[in-house]
Length: 404
Length: 69
Picture (tube, rainbow over the protein chains, first blue to last red):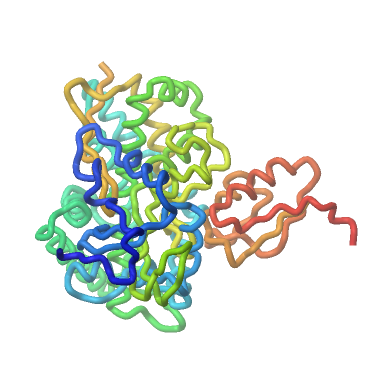
């Protein structure tokens, strides 16, 4: 046994469940990994999963949304500092601000918040919409079928984000490939991709130090926290986080959303004929199909809802589990596009709330609006099957739609 | 009606402002401005929807008439 259950974990609290190895988590044609994890709600509110991280570690699993709030809001007891990216390289530096705890977190977060605020995102919207329209018009003009992931979701979301970073879009495929290897690759591809991304960010930062431009990395290398410039390692920490965070998650969300609408023609037609419903619908699709598992490390011993959490234990708050909590959402496994009071956990709780949440939301809404306005009734192409997967970041590899 | 704003709990989700930007005002970083909010007559429904939309539970409804002191 490579991953023995720690001695302090009572055997009756161990369950055979994992976001990596449970049924429906490996790449599955026509899979529904979000529904697959919802089964934990028939069990206890907290249990121990012996193999629940990419590197094979055990975690406590918090299933109730209210308990996840408690964990994610209590940064003194549950630290976010775990060098998840650097550890793939055998190094120890934090992605910033995600892997800093308060109070150090605050200064960096304040620095970056205005770049991703609702106001800033509203100013970006025309460019976002133009990009969506250009891509979808191209798709509509070239036939009655496409692979949404390859032809729309990735080029759309990654392009917006590369513009934000001031990076050229002729390298989209390269960047998406790095992201895929990093988030979904094996033990060889993952560290190789991590190393490539670090070198890329380091070189980009060095280039901007020599030659200031009007872009994100220039901002970061010039920025000050607490009256001083950021260190090279801090610049790297910020650059890597923002780069990695923007590569995959929004594209996956758009893929899951359009897959849902392709399979539910009544809902699809409702949104097409009444586009005013798309904002609320996008919120419900965010609830139903979130992509990330948040992990914290206990900084001290604490008994939590009957579980003896000990210092150093990993605690998993999977957004896809919180979002299916029947105590918080009526009929959580039903997608109700008009759902009210939809306080989902998709962007996390607490001070590490997804920095890019406002941009992500806007991209999803604009993407759905323009897609539905330009593509007639679509379904999943006969003989094809979207391949979905669980893991640290849930994903959808392909989505071949047909509107012939 | 009054909305009690717990600024320490606000994490900038901005869901309240998405429901009612004229009631829930944000700073440049996207976090709610300090101070409780007196809700104008006729705005109660919108305001309570906005307050209920907070994922962090940073906004509380106070339905007591605020004229009594």
